[in-house]
Image (tube, rainbow, N blue to C red):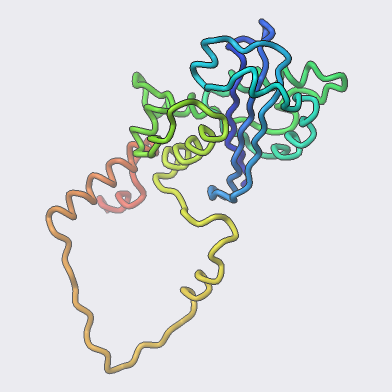
Length: 238
C-alpha cells in the first residue's frame, strides 16, 4: 500500500479570494513504512502573502520571488502522488487549494481525486477523540510525538510530523526501518541456529509489579488509539 502524507502552505485561507499555494511537502509511506522519498517545492504565487499567513509559516514574498510556478512543477507533483492514498490533516483545505491550482492550468488535468484518493486525518482524529482538540500539536502531545523543533509551520516538516502521528493513531507503533532497508539483518535473524544440548537452563525472570502496571497502561493506550480492544486482550476472557 502506497500512501503520501501531504501538507501545503498558502498565501491565505480562501482560494475563492485568489489565494494560492506557496509550498508543497510530501513524504512517502509504503506498507506503513517511510521509504525516504519525498517531494518538496516552494512556489511563486504571483500575489502578495497575507500578513497573518506569514506569521504562521514565516515564508516571505521576497523568498518566493525566484521560485517556479505551480504550472512549472505540476507534472512532477502529479507523478509523485499518482495512484497513492493522500494522508492530509484537514484535507478539504489542502485539496481545495490543489484543485484550484489544477483548475487554473491551460490544460486542466482534472481534480486531485482523479489521480489519487484522500484520507483526512482530522476527520479520523475527531472520530477517535470526540470533543477533544485534534489539531496537529494536540495529536503530537496525545501520541507522544516530538514536535519541539516545530516553531513555525512548514509543509515538509508538518508532513513528516503527520506521518508519525498517523502511524501512531492507526497502529500504535511505527517501524523505524525504511522500506527496503535491513533485509540482510532480517535474513540473519531468520537463519536457524542450533544450540548445544548441554547448554545451561535459561533463567525465568518474572515481571515486576511496576513493569506489569506499565504493560497495562500500554495496552489501554493501544486500545484507545484503535477505538476498540488491543489485540493482546482478546483472548483474556476465553
